[in-house]
Image 1 (tube, rainbow, N blue to C red):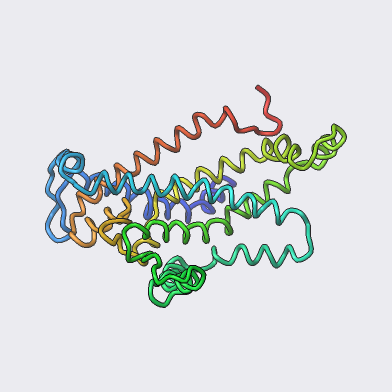
Image 2: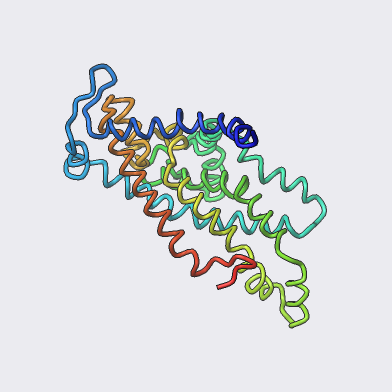
Length: 294
């Protein structure tokens, strides 16, 4: 009876997993070997989609490299910024509760609304950023931001930082910091450790599991970037922000090449899986778990 009750409680999750994750994944796996336009019956083409992706798709490699470049910039800065914010909020200063709310607000803002807001902020003609740049420099020249291929990526990175430094990443860091035993800090003080020494020798080693967790989620999230670029730039100008997820979307819902898009998605899944596996494989070299005995 207990087993039946347990399965009944798990059944909504199991049904959701089967219907919305496992089922669509299996279907896309099959479609990746077909030519399918959502109207006609899927036509089996074998590995043709994958061959075309690697040999004929002129946007495949640029979109993949652009996505990795974006993640390479956003993830480290987001982790460092979130950690610094969590350290400041962990000091127990007056007004900490209000600051926590302030830092978390960007995370509560829907990504579409945030993209529209930043589109106005970075508007080359009437946006406040360019207004202050022109006021301070006294020059009429200012970045074109989302209208300029050289500045569009920078605008998206700034927008990502704004949303990532607060939110769940910061809260998870804060929880990790509050889980560090106070007696370790007391022992460090007895040994004559200063603020930096305590942070380097006590805090950082003790929160390495938290850093690792946030890093894995941060990399996956950054590589899946879509909504911000779709709303703010639509992948432009001149493909300057044409991320991999946008490439999949275009093939699937603009050109209705569902089989081709499924192949792109599975390549992306394999890349994400490999990166995640590598991170877990080498995490034991630097991640410390309290109570773990070698």
